[in-house]
Image (cartoon, rainbow, N blue to C red):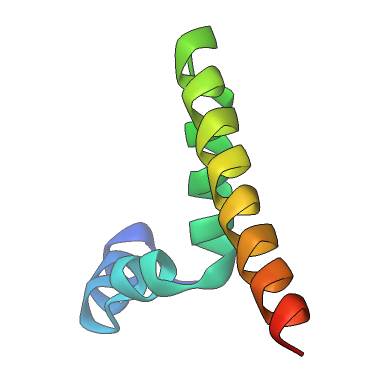
Length: 68
C-alpha cells in the first residue's frame, strides 16, 4: 500500500482536483449544495426567473404555431 505522501504526489501530478471540478458529477453536487443553501428570497428569485423563461418559450411557440 502506498503512503499518503506518495498518493499526494501522484494526486497533484495527475491534477485530480481539476479533473474532478470539470466532471458532471462534481458540477451536479455543487449545484445541489448551492440550491440547498439558498435563502427564501433567493428561491423566490429563481422561481420568478424560471417562470419568465417558461413564458418566453411559450410565447415563441405560440408565434410559430400562429404563423404555421
